[in-house]
Image 1 (cartoon, rainbow, N blue to C red):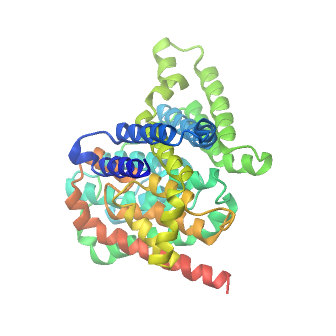
Image 2 (cartoon, rainbow, N blue to C red):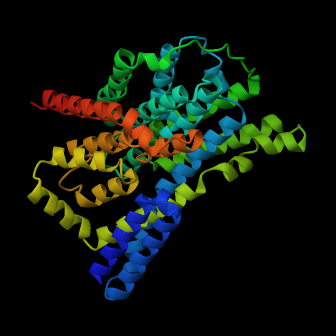
Image 3 (cartoon, rainbow, N blue to C red):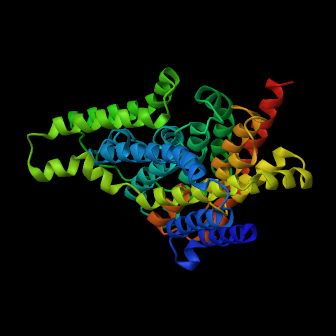
Length: 423
């Protein structure tokens, strides 16, 4: 039975990694994989209380899902109010090279607040309005992916994998910001410097003047309340010690009521556009179901102690945990980083590796940024791929080496920084 479960996991994992050539949505594969693993576990080990075990795992899984639902809805409400125009209206440069730096810096910091997927969608959409030449647009999109993944790694709400580690108790807010912000900056900065020095000719020509879009005062209010609310969630958890999704739902509830009050006397079609219920309909449900399936599957393997044995085998075979984690980061460029981090959380016992241990910090960095090496290696990359129809081989040739330089440079900075802080 155990061999069958492992085979189902391998087949499911492979179908997720080969989503595009197979043309099978990874959410369907993940859900089927997760349910089959628990079904076979229940049949094969009837003496085990699988119902209680599954309920225990679902408790922590639901915290992640509710957190993501709240965050996605808040961002959709801000977007419906054209709140992001407050940022784009302030971009006045005519130089494409300077624009690349501005967008990369904005992407880096906003992905730490809004998450790397949302930030990539906003920034790539902006680039499509500014850059006419397709080859240059693709280059901007690639740099956006690198900056977004780097920015998401050092914030507890910037990347799904970092959020998973935060909710799971493996990392804490202040420590992860303190320890990963410098490696993440280096991860984004090295590619920018490389492009500036060696590929500036790809960014020749001036930008056309961009027409600014007026943002109404009520839309500004929604923007600042939404972004401020997202930033306050880690503070809320620190003060109350309640799960992060509670703080996220508090922000959503407040924003929902304020939005309804602002538009209560307007026409029905206007109210529907700004309504939070409408925003809920636009969130990425397939991704949420993908996370559910993956986390269920990994929870099943954890309950069967498979991941524990994998960790022991890797330690015996490779030995060096830093090398193992760097490898996990690079593997996340091929296979989605969510199951890799979920597996890592099951491989290493918190009794041995407590909160804010080096292993959790380094996993957060490597899994968050390693996916930039390939266009399919992160949610940000897949979003950019869809928006600009970026070819896999083009990204590998033009951006893969640049992203790898940033990833390795940031990893080196983290390891050096750790040695200096723990001589």
